[in-house]
Image (cartoon, rainbow, N blue to C red; front, side, top):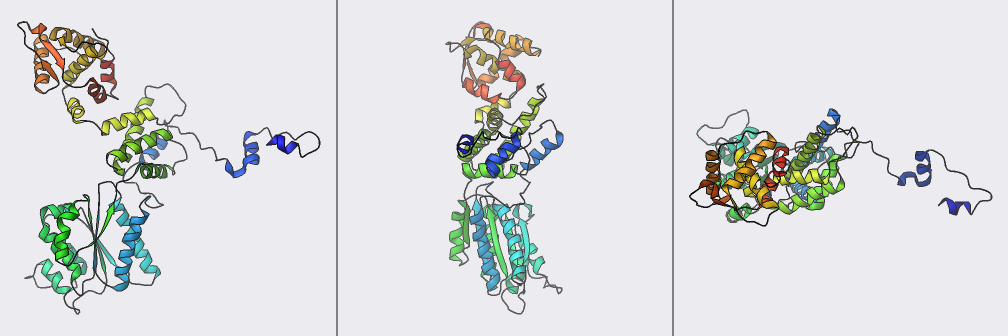
Length: 440
């Protein structure tokens, strides 16, 4: 660029400023992104800020990312009900961690704000979590409390009957609309469908003022109860929250990290997490948990490092965090074993890791086990107890123990993959050291 400029001038071209910042700014202006300060992971305040940004309970001040369409549809439904002063019901479903509850919470705020701006009466609101109900029918008591006038209704009527009578006559019907959000509706679907049907039917009564929004985790639950509601002429509008895609998970994580003034993750690490979680569940809460775990793994590594410089959470840290979340069943079972049985599996892995042999003897395995105990400074058990441990592992399907007149000559074969043993102990310094032991 400077060469081209100099051909248009007479004489020698002017030298650029010695200051890198001023020269970059003059040459490229706003095209050059401002350099972000380096993260100091050894600063407790900065580390805490990172963990808070990735906590599932932390909500962004800019709103929920990647759920604009779903929120818009729910908001339009609520606006129509308020404008027309009519009751209505809506069913929100989707897998866990897809932003259902948070989206509905944002919609509630938007409805109140919109009603104020339009000069309309703001609806009351009521949030109920079905898992907190002592009895499923208690849901009607909670709704009645919101509508209850000073004059108590007859004690002979149940809360449901009082609501039904209230919404059947214009004189007794409340004037203000009530937005009812019923979370964890799966509980009603599986425990008491009669209560569920009565709840949705409240919105069909002539003078009802209820805007009912039910939230459930499983998508297929709608097929179980919607046909019955349709036959009762109270089928709700259904809005499905699909599992988050790789790009959406990546965007949400980066959006949360924007509040920080420094880079925390390698871009490849975030992409790896997003791809893995999207392929498995699409659960955003799980993705945030994995990221927090990766940060904690990185933090624990700082204690063994003498490097005073700043660093970031790498692909390897994320790989370890993901391996802890997405473990095969056999891996979880290995992690539940007593320590010495785990060390026996490590001895087996070491025996077969670099050998073409598919079998060993109890005596040879015991030598490998003792070598691990010696290197890790863990007292080894005696031969009789070692033999008993191997029999237990054989009964549980980890290895196969043959028969022999002499115990030390009993043939042993591994019945699980060596990779499962390595995977189970990934990130554990003690067991990684056990697996580093050479074949005896």
